[in-house]
Length: 220
Ligand SMILES: Nc1nc2c(ncn2[C@@H]2O[C@H](COP(=O)(O)OP(=O)(O)O)[C@@H](O)[C@H]2O)c(=O)[nH]1
Ligand SMILES: [Mg+2]
Image 1 (tube, rainbow, N blue to C red):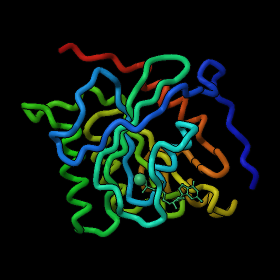
Image 2 (cartoon, protein in one colour):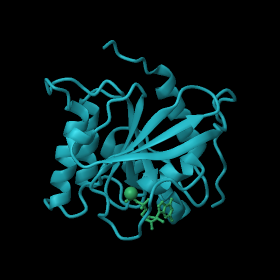
Image 3 (cartoon, rainbow, N blue to C red):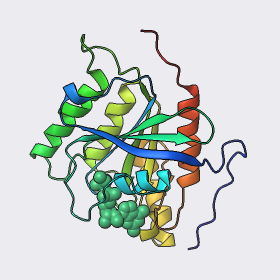
Image 4 (cartoon, rainbow, N blue to C red):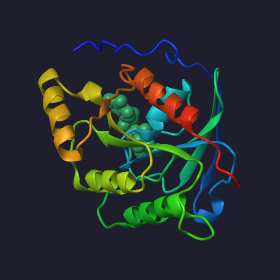
């Protein structure tokens, strides 16, 4: 089915990225950055397409992608400067749930928890977080690990966007079924995206730009 782009508000449409670069990888809480920039965190299972989506959003290759799951056990920071508005960080959180109960799942739990609550007191939500995009594979709606992650992020009270990836792999019939299954499993609508067709990229930009715009730097 050819992808028909949804209309997006003119003001936000077609964000141009004037600079995009990899900043650093954090393996432990001590490596997590403390900067004055707002952060958009990308979470999801290994191989769901986080790095590919970050490259599509950036309009260039800044994140390493891999057909073999389970490579990223780090939080990777990318700095993006849109043509309008402030610069921000995209934070690619470690993939989770590839092998249940395996080391990777625990690494996600630890680093994601520290990412959210890593302050000296260990009780505040990282003030830099402007929003979380939770990526789920459109072909596998409602996996336990994804639903658990969604509930966990929602409970932290941050702006959360559910993003379904690899929509190009669905037939028209599968697509309708997947959309309904996603709503049933997560209780929210997922934004359908595809890197090869470009579906959903502008819409995701609209959401990101809104979160970055609405974010206010917390008092120090
Ligand atoms: N067909 C299709 N493949 C995708 C899409 N996004 C990612 N992939 C593929 O899925 C694999 C994992 O992607 P990657 O971005 O490395 O996943 P990550 O582990 O979540 O960072 C790679 O082989 C990508 O080429 C998509 O939208 N459509
Ligand atoms: Mg990756």
